Length: 119
Image 1 (cartoon, helix red, strand yellow):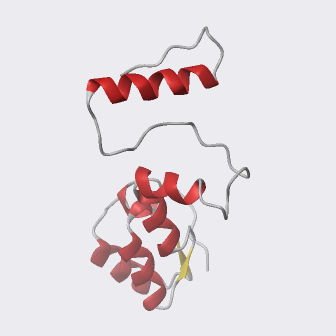
Image 2 (cartoon, helix red, strand yellow):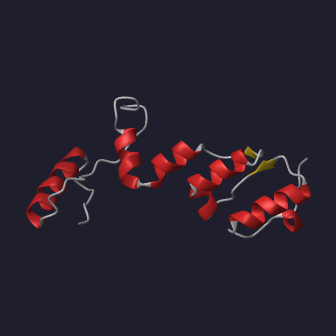
């Protein structure tokens, strides 16, 4: 069963209320919207555990993409290398001005001279 229309939207990030309303309204599937619940891997798992269809990325994907660092590591891994463009950057432990400047110059040299690098 599909429920369409603003009066059927649940504008609440309370997982319990959403699950409860979904049972009450006898919905088949849940879309998390574009707020906090769309980034909540536990909510995705809960929806599936409760027997609803989850309309969104898997909990694993939410977890991997939820952190910019882990997402970048994944997308630059051999599995995805060259398939998805990733903006170059530096994520080393040494955050000194000297190292950051060196890394910024390396990144800048990869691009046209007109582009600037912000530290």
